[in-house]
Length: 150
Image (tube, rainbow, N blue to C red; front, side):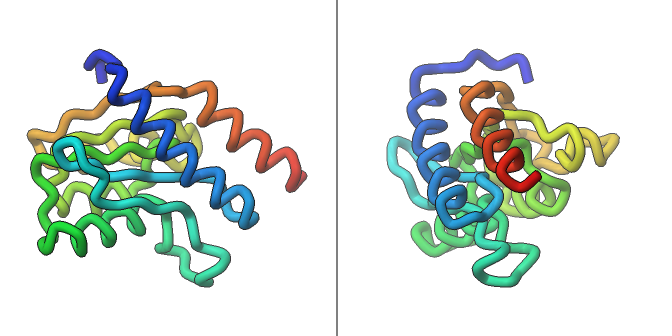
């Protein structure tokens, strides 16, 4: 988690934030995700759990499905996931199975994030994890959403 935050990481997190805003506008929990392979976006997603009435329709799962379809295979080695909030255990497990090479997230999820729920990493052993990219912006979107709900 000590890897440096690059300009590319910041730009790609902006795309993930754009996806999160789509969820926010649809009254979904505002989490957005983008998967990049090389210099190309191969998958995007935002939470659709309410509109699809599906507890598994998280942003990461939507992006994983889109990326696998774009690339024509289930393994995403050489790809990076950018997600606005730390993945939950379900999403982290799916990311581990996809063998994605890198996970970059914005805000921690102190209640349901994988790092709180597990004692060992669910990711592929060679997966690099970077946290805190645009953390304040990612956290602010979540806080704004939940403040409207309470």
